[in-house]
Image (cartoon, rainbow, N blue to C red):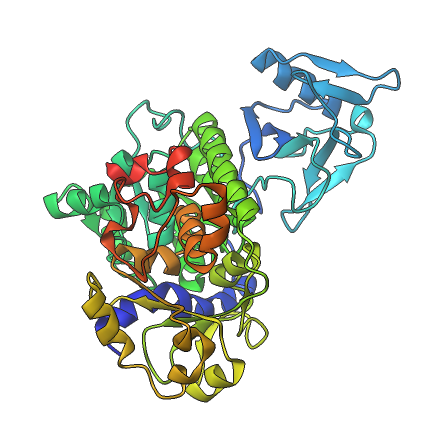
Length: 471
């Protein structure tokens, strides 16, 4: 396997091998740390965190009243004492405001009688109008540690500018997207986006502290970081977080991002850990709006799609529990290998032929494809069986190279760009019907995929989601 391909698949294939060990790894601290506070979850990824102490005898109702007094939020209650609205935001349809506490697994559990519940033994509680379950914002990271109160507006508790280290490409991009680039002092060697990050690495302001699955503990510690951000989809990162915490270094282990909800929650966690909760809310709103607009227009009508990590007789491809499959399904398409594995795996050329894909997408990291001639040359290396598919016969083969290749291989903050490009190449008619000038008409993307002059990313650009990539 070429070195460039190893770089590309490290975030997909190596991570899937490591994640199996996560559930059995022990931690040296309690399931949540010593900080106390109230999360007010208004729903739709709008959350406010109020750090406060819970004195002995304080009830859930009293904690909410104290938190809202801190924020000057009016609280309206029904005659029976139940909460009707917080800051003029009433209960959602069929979902009332309720109080929740963390169970031993770090999941939210509802409290039947908040007025009689003593919260003094809790570290963190939530008042939410979302209902229990996945709709609620998690209060803890993948390793069940709270991510609040490490910083306020980019400052550490001493009032100094934060110093942070990020140890995975997708994590680095997520931190940069919510305004964290200026605080990064170290990254793994595969973090190479956005361009402002690379410039800071080349100038020596940001150090390289090791690989993706083998970060160098001593190099990270030498940077004296306030926070280290890690990838919860990688077992080595979970183990390393425990080691850092033993050394007194704060860690945030992001959730393994497979779905859009995972990404949005990771954005919120990063923003809150840096003390930028309001910025995180705003950015998530813009991301959600862009994704909703793109998915509203696209209609892939169950087209069969094959995604390959390079041109090969047996390339790696995405199974069900992957970022790529979730994107395709959100657009109405169908991954031909969604039922074969729950992660990335190697598919044979014979199986690809048997599935007869309507569309083939190549993630090509060997070199940038910048011309039609280079595109045709790459396709000439297809094996004979791939050439006997509807995708090849109908010219429905698309290549993502350079920055566009990492766009599809990282479950990070560039999800809206991935969705818009995929939607427009697979269903150009729907976007032209929406706007006759919205014509893409290309078979390959490279470093210039997000150039503001090419017009590929109209819906993403409209939400202001490209600014962090211009730094």
